[in-house]
Image 1 (spheres, one colour):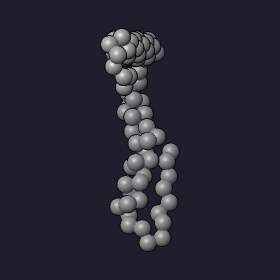
Image 2 (cartoon, rainbow, N blue to C red):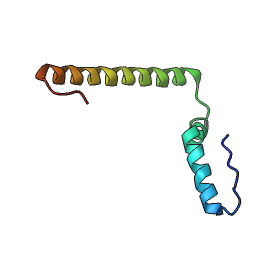
Image 3 (tube, one colour):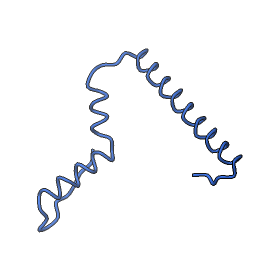
Image 4 (cartoon, helix red, strand yellow):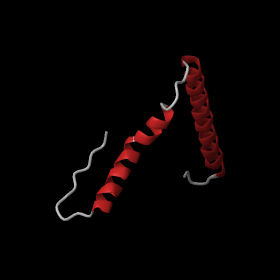
Length: 77
């Protein structure tokens, strides 16, 4: 859990903003939303499998795009 120490002569709003940024960076809110309801193990496996397939297809598309541009003599992004 992120923590923020309020510095001397620091406005409360600035400390709250730093805390919110730290929570977002740590993924606290996403974790809370994910654990809000019970997810059956089979559903969790399906979700993770679908995410893995999506990542793989995205990686293949990126590689195909880079290869296509390489053949045309364009620089890679």
